[in-house]
Length: 225
Image (cartoon, rainbow, N blue to C red; front, side, top):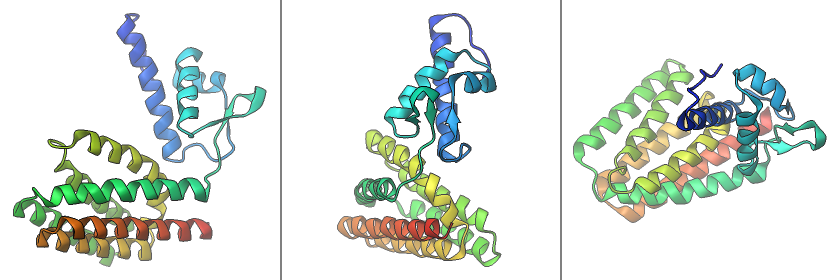
């Protein structure tokens, strides 16, 4: 349930934003299965808010493609399509490839060593068959890597984080399986090598290949479900 804000204008805005953010998070993390019906009444009751912020949130989420209209019945959760997934990974490859080329120009040795420690921890978790921990360390690797560009390229970082939220909706299932986790760790080692060599063009190419491998793993795993 969302805690009710004050009756001030900014308080009302806060309720709207909280409602939108919570529903968006629930959709991206798969808490609503495909084709599930979403109505203003049921969501408002569940979240403990009025129908107005729920209605506005649903329309915003429709523009993002996270829900779709279901005639007079309100909204429903769309099924994932290979085309949508392919588009997301293509965008991610371009953004993250460019970002790594930017990072390559300014990264310090201490940052490379810190990233290397995360890869080592992921390897140890993999050897212990702790796939959830592998996923967590791999996520930390990307978080830390792109945290290095926030001071110089905040808009680029914002775009990357937005796309990653969508991608992780599909990607988490692959990183808890051994082959996907193994390829991800190997890809991070290649990224570290490219950064150590200080070659922006190589970094961009390595990162794009890393994202394309992630796409292949995701499509393969989803076809098995």
